[in-house]
Image: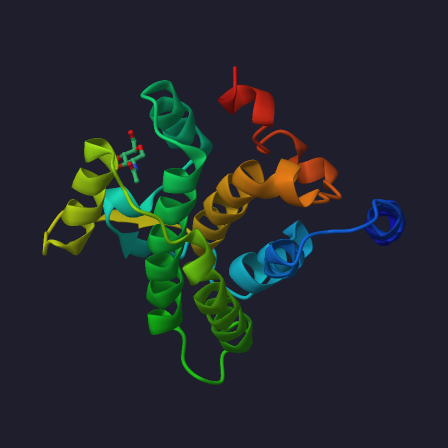
Length: 191
Ligand SMILES: *[C@@H]1O[C@H](CO)[C@@H](O)[C@H](O)[C@H]1NC(C)=O
């Protein structure tokens, strides 16, 4: 109940925040689809307890990574590009383990198609060698895999996304109490 009220307030504030650029429309759709309640239901409750998906180390892109990369001089544009590439792969991996009639299948398919339409916006010439190395490693076949819970994968997706777009697109985050501790503050990243 309480979270609904917060969402409502959030929409009110956004409505008054006047003109939001076109580029931010998809961003806001993604933000809305990735909200805590949805991640909790589709990626948590609908999966068996302790279910894990094997991903590449480079597919784990957390706020801490972003902090490190910013400290190494990587630009926000490059980080957005990296976020897009990593998370398209992550969504594919989640989709792969889901049978078509699983209740989360539609959710992931929908997210994937929104992300696909969003990817061209993140496209960017990558000058940084560090990012290029990550991109090359991502494409290589490798045996090293890390087991991660599906919800943790989408939590990373959301947190980094939020961090990279919240200011520009005035993203709203009706934060739930349970997520409060784990949510990454922008100040953690831009010090
Ligand atoms: C993020 O950091 C983790 C842990 O240090 C590392 O394994 C992973 O490769 C990093 N991800 C990217 C995309 O650089």
